[in-house]
Amino acid sequence: MLDFLKPFKKTKTVDRATLVQRFIDHPEHEWIKRDPTVSRLVRILCDSWTDEVYRFLAQGHEILIIKAQGQLASAMSSVNKTNVVLAYPDLVSILRSASPMRGVAILAHEIGHIVKEHSKRKITNIEAQIEADKVAFDMGFGEDLEQVLIEHEHSIDCRVRIAKLTQYYYAAKKQA
Image (cartoon, rainbow, N blue to C red; front, top):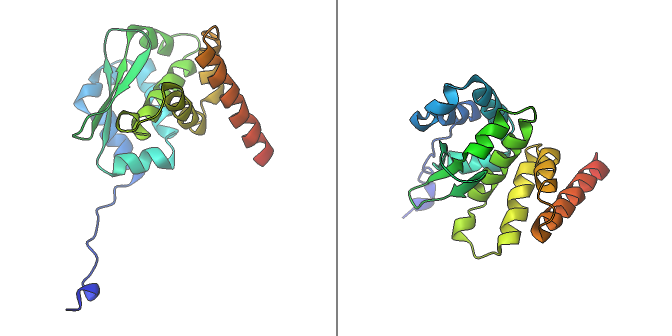
C-alpha cells in the first residue's frame, strides 16, 4: 500500500580510483604493464577521463585495450558490456615515439566511440568521428588529435574533423 515509503534500492557506487585501478589491473592489460612507456601513457589517459567516461564505467561497462594487427586503432562494443579498443602496431609505435601524446589522443578518440555507444546508434560515420573527437578534446587531447588528423588532411572527413576541433578550441578559449 505505501510502497513509496519503502527505501530506494541502493546502488553501489564505485569511486574513480577503483575504476582506474580495475581498468589498469585487467588481465588483458598485462602487455601495457610490461611496457613502462605505454604504462605511463595509459595512466595519463586514465587521469584524463571525463565524468562521462567515469559514469560509463560505473554502470558496469569495461573497456579493454588489446594489441591486434591493422592500422592505428579501432573500437568494438559488445552486448555484455565489454568493449575493446584494438591497438594496432602503428599505434603502439606512436606511443613509443617522440610524440607519444598523439597515440594517447587516438586511444581517447576510440574510447569516445565506446562511451558514445556508436555501435548502438544510427548516425553517419562523420558524425561518429566528430563525437569521438569531442570526447578526446574534452579529455585534453584535442591538439594532439589534430596533429594526427593533419597527417591525413587529404581526406575531406579529416578536414571537417580538424575544423570542428578548431571550433571546440576557440569556444573553450572564449569561455576561459
